[in-house]
Image (cartoon, rainbow over all chains, first blue to last red; front, side, top):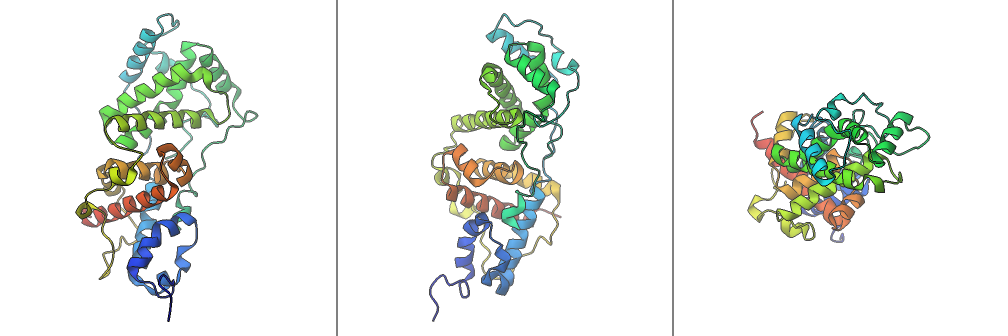
Length: 109
Length: 205
């Protein structure tokens, strides 16, 4: 007789209740005895892996509208009237900077 | 493997003052000392990433614009306090996330009792997979369908999914940001993925 929760005999419901913790643990779930014997949960796991993998390719970075800087600059001026050198096009006319470790353009999403 | 899915993503930058481009460091230093033109350069450099982050987290263009504006205004107020303990981009990223979280709290999303706030009614929750095998996603996904499905997620699910699976934060980092338990973060992420799976199986392919 096996104990409740025994990986070799657990039901799909028991296994799926454990899934969030198993996935978060970093263990290779494909080696779990239940996965090796259950087509249904194997398909579920494959789907979740596919979704997580695809998520990294989602939502490429997009440009905010040009007017946004004007709004920000206007607020900055309102908060600190002494700001000098402000120009409505300052952000757009700024020289290109190297996108190093603190950069933006080279961090893919 | 699922648990490694996001760790295989490009690593978040680690600040290295030796490797940092001197021109970038100079711009940052000038912005910290109040040079408005330098601040504009920082905006130009980081606007896409911050705006896109806000857009992913709230799923609404108008809100994302407002939140981007608020993030850069906060940056302007706080930039002098940046000490270089982490990469500037990481610091700004976290600042922007905090702006979004504050916004969501004001909208009523309780990040303290995540389970209550984020769990939809039982009949709206992600389906389990007991019984007959379901249609498998066959290893490929229509990206647009997935993007739509993420946008349609309830706010709390989307928040965890975006932070973990898209932005690459670890559960312990998310738990700290959201003031919830690590187990809660894992559980909500799992539910979000299940809900996406349900959605993808119902979208026309």
